[in-house]
Length: 330
Image (cartoon, rainbow, N blue to C red; front, top):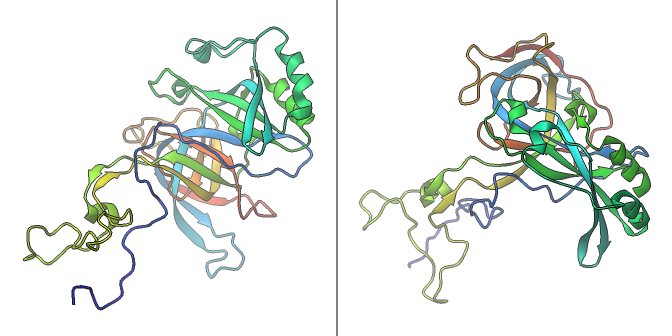
């Protein structure tokens, strides 16, 4: 009787294969929500993770045992400098997927970004783009953020695309066209009390064994050869190890998207009434300067990492209520 005679839950999740390193420090957003409004809106922004605080609030969830009582919850502080609108990209769509039809760039960029990149329009780019709007299905804004605006040392800006949704394609194109070369603050996209999704690259752990990587139970201390390994790699036939068997390998530095993070506070350090900076600044980050938000709960990634913020794709609330914050414990 070589097999075991009792049931046991699977160790480790099968939802996150392959567990390899992410190709970039910047997370990708590949799915976007729909904006049913007639007014176009950019659906994404970004920030840099600074640290964690505790938030004392009044529970405003009506159908909970703690309704109206004080709650202490974890909050994550993100520095959210303004993003610059560099350009517009239009996509057509067929049964193979999306295809880029045109790019239109701003004539002038902020100094911190123009030093690092060089984007120029072709002659008549805007006129040609307007002619192609008939076959365009989606409009994306090409946005950039400088880490130096968040107080970091990195010079190279992060550049990514953010979907513009709401209204028809012509309205979306006109909306982004008016914003070309300008900066957008996070308060122009999100509001306090709203819930958003975050995408980031998790903290890297390097090469780890099956105990830490999958949560496999250790063998008996007198077992043959090894203790911190799986007992069996599988049957003798077929003569290969199945992918579902826990193996040692890379842990962390994966792309993850987490849903429904509520914005508890949004402000600027210059005119904010509640102090959010600890004495000496946050560990491994420093002092938060400028625009910031506090999200309820944890956020993937380590300090100073880019966190992309997207409009909520599921469970969107009908009514947005502003949190009643009593205190922020640093």
